[in-house]
Image (cartoon, rainbow, N blue to C red):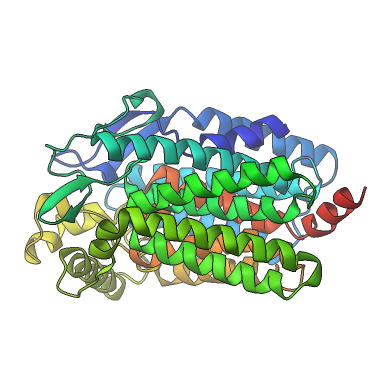
Length: 433
C-alpha cells in the first residue's frame, strides 16, 4: 500500500497519455478527454487505500470539516454538469476531480496511520526535483528536448514559435520544461522539491555529514532548475518560502544552528547563479504592465469576471474555454486562437466553472486545511509552505485546476496537509530513538 502512495508522488512529472476525444472544431488542450498512464496507480491507491482504512476502522469521516468540504466540492463539480454546454467534458472533469479528492483523502489517512511517512514523501519529491532540474538543464543548454517523449516531455526546438522562451539581448532562449507541459508547471514542482529538501535538512541529525552534503547538492541542482524555468512567480515564491521557514527555525534554539547553515548555503547558491546568469535574470526580472503576458492575464481575468457575473451557477467544470469560444469572447477581445486558454487565475476560473457557491466551498476548504496546521509545531509549517506556494501560483496561472500534473500536485499536497499534524511528534520520537 505504501508503495502505491510513493509511486503516485514519483509519477507527478511523467504525463504520458492517450487522447480519447477532442471537443470543438479544432484541437484545444483544454477541451480533450485523455487517459494517463498513471491513472491506474491512482485508481489502485484509492481502492486499496480505502479498503485498508475501512477494514482497520480508521476511515474517520468526522475527522474534520476538510473531509466533508472536499466531498461537497466534488458534488458541486457533478452538479455543474447540468449547466455545461458540453456535458460529457464536464462529467469527465468532475470524475477526475473526484478521483483526485479521493487520492488526497487516502494520502491523509495513510499519513495519520503511519503507513506512509512525510519524510519519505519529501525524499520522493526531492529526488524528482533533481531529475527534472537535470532534464531542464539539458533542454536549456542544447535548446532542444531530451527525447524522453514517453515520459510526457514536449517536443522542443528553437524554431517552434509556441515554445515558451526568454528574450535576452534581442535573442530568444528556450526555457526549461522538464517533462511537464510548460515551464511554469515545472517551476511549481521544483519549488515543492526545494521545500522538501529544506524539510529533510531539518529532520536530518546534525552528525549525518553525508546526508547534509547530499541535501546541499540537491538544493543547488533544484535551485538551478528554478532559475532555468525563468518563472518570476517561482523566483518570488522560492525566496519567500526560504525566508519564512528560516525565520521560524531561527526562533527555536535547537534548530538555530541548522537554520544558519541552510541560510549560508542558499546565499552562496544565490551568488553563484547571480554571477553566471545575471544578464538573463535581470532581463527577466523587469516587469511592466505593458508586457504581453501581463496584459493577457488581465484579459483572462476580465473574461472570468464576466462569466461569473452572467452565470452565478457556473458554466460547468472544464467548460470555460469552450463557453468563451462559443460566446466569441476571445474573438471580441482580439485574442488569436493560440490564446484561447483558461482564465489565468484558479479562483476566478473555479468561480466561472463551478459558480459562486463552488468558489466559496473551495476557499473554505483551503482556509480549513491551512488553519488546522496552526500550532502543530514548526516542522509542519514546512509542508504547509508547499500549499501556500501553490496557492500563490494560482493567482496568475490555471494549471492547478486544468492540467493533470498541476491538479495531481495540488491535491497530493492537500492530502499531506490533511494528514500531517501528527508527523511533528512522530519525527521527534524517531530522531530521539
